[in-house]
Image (cartoon, rainbow, N blue to C red; front, side):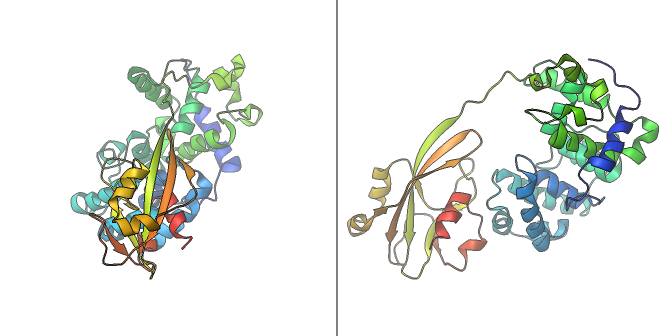
Amino acid sequence: MKAASTDFATRVVQWQQSQGRNDLPWQNTRDPYRVWLSEIMLQQTQVATVKGYFARFLARCPDVASLAAASQDEVLGLWSGLGYYSRARNLHRCAQQLVELHGGRFPRDAQTLATLPGIGPSTAAAIASLCFSERVAILDANVKRVVTRVQGFDADVAVAANARALWAAASALLPAHGRAEAQMARYTQGMMDLGAMVCTPKKPLCTHCPVQGECVAFKAGEPECYPVRSRKIKRSSQAIWMLWAQTAEGAVWLDRRPVPGVWAGLHCLPLFDSHAALHQTLAPPAQAQLQSESSFIHVLTHKDLHLHPCRVQLSPHTLLGQGRWVSAEEWPGLGLPAPIRKLLERL
């Protein structure tokens, strides 16, 4: 691993100020609530998608206290469609702990922040550096790519010992102690922006990079070889049949998904492993009325769900297990998986 020059961080800071992203709704603030919310939403989610959710979430829950006081259904409803719903449940739990244990205020250091639900080391470092100027490195996917390429870090980052060494490599690039208070917020944002805008996974724009002169991967002509990760998660698929039961008045039968599992904790149409299992849930008169809708595929990160909705109209007095009838006025506000919401919006 090569040593970084003393002005590496300064060039990142200067580039961010002139070329980086400076107009996102969660930027230009030292409010840890907004930074935290954006960091959680941006995990595995594109900036363009997050913008709308961020605004709607703030309109309903503008601060830690209002988020802690909200019900889980309200929080999941605001999150519905963003995916990775454990993020929303942890967000809610974290707000409650902040109120109960910290008086509604965010701890100012990454070590304490990382003890809260849903806040890992990189998110904790982002909050601490962006809001409180703590000299601590973040290591999200974008920054990991920048660090491995600049430092020529060719160890397998899927190995725990190498991942720890990468944190040390990222820390070696930080602004000097005397400059940390003035530079940390913009440096942290600059590293994220470099990864998102210039040091991209494929076809990086090396000629636009402010630290090209120090980049080992660029000099070797192989930036796309970094980061090195041997462990690959295989994609899988699953077939699911969904019972889309509704009344003449438009109420829909929903139950809550178990935790853990697909769409854990969300309100959902009843799910079955086969058409036969779904069919047997209904009484004979309803079985005769069951209609198969068009099947479709919903893509998760590592799994393709082949979804087969089956529709039937039932009396509101019919019970289908542990769920309940939910009116057309109520279900839009519940936490629903994105494909279920799209189906119901066709009503």
